[in-house]
Length: 298
Image (cartoon, rainbow, N blue to C red; front, side, top):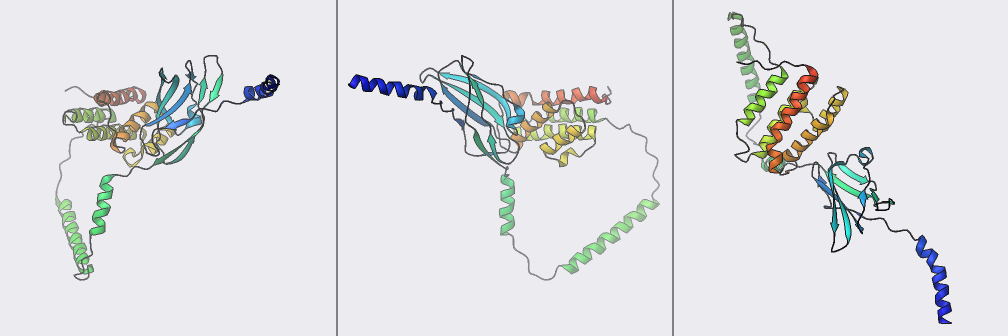
């Protein structure tokens, strides 16, 4: 009788067990919140081996930008982990869609979706300035307007004297000096930075800031916009409107510089030593594209 009951249980439960869906693997993040430009690590863990990560659609996961991924097999636990590295340059909460995993037999499964929160970067210097302003008090020694009026009158008199002096002064015509091209200015600026020995002195943030400014000024000069008054995102949009060819390389370079400048990211020594080379490649490639003037030998 017991055998008969056991047979019935197996008979009716087997289809249910076979049809049960395997739960999707979790999509884990290494931190609860990030700042703009912080490196982000996503982790997907499955049991067994032989799995591989499916193709990642960049448009589908935007604004999350994938910078690399790796596969790790844990023999002790018998699990396979996929580490997806990336970065986000926008502020807000973003839902990442499921990532596709393919097993050894070619069957597809998808991870769960994930939520990432990105906050704006707050500079410590701004905090110190706000604290200083809060401690300042208004000087109540009397009205300020008489002093302001006296200052305006003094400025007006000095301006009039300077105008009369310039009118009377006879200036000899200055020789026409050829204007340097954006390419020449950029090459000279990089050479000047290289001579500062910022890497030797450990001034990595200053190095990334100066080199980034050179590339920004170069792009602005070539495509006629004020790059120094733009964020990296605004600059990329301006380059898109200018039908810029190699947008990915410039966007990634400026993004890497922003991470060091604003997100307090410490780059590897290999990246620091290769920074000048990356900047020169960007400048040299566009020199050919826009046919700018080459520097003259002395």
